[in-house]
Length: 83
Image 1 (cartoon, rainbow, N blue to C red):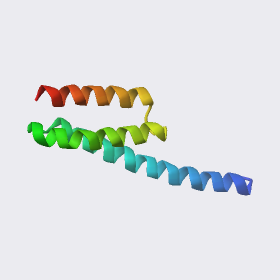
Image 2 (image 1 turned 90 degrees about the horizontal axis):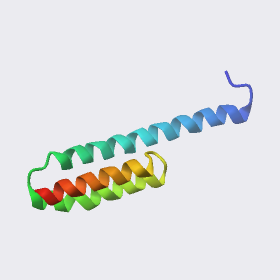
Image 3 (image 1 turned 180 degrees about the vertical axis):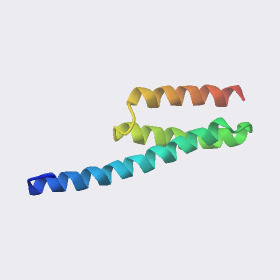
């Protein structure tokens, strides 16, 4: 158990941040999954900028690594262009 007030606050804030990060990461993973399962090129082209924006936001907030975001964006763009 924490012995200092600041340590207790740190535990609370870490938990809140962890839950927030998990929510945004899961939402983005679902968006990426939906985009990959899309067979319609028009729909995929409409959704790609939204998914890229989500990935950039996660990378900016250090929820995912910037290189992972870059790799995902690259692969998704290639997929959409192949459709």
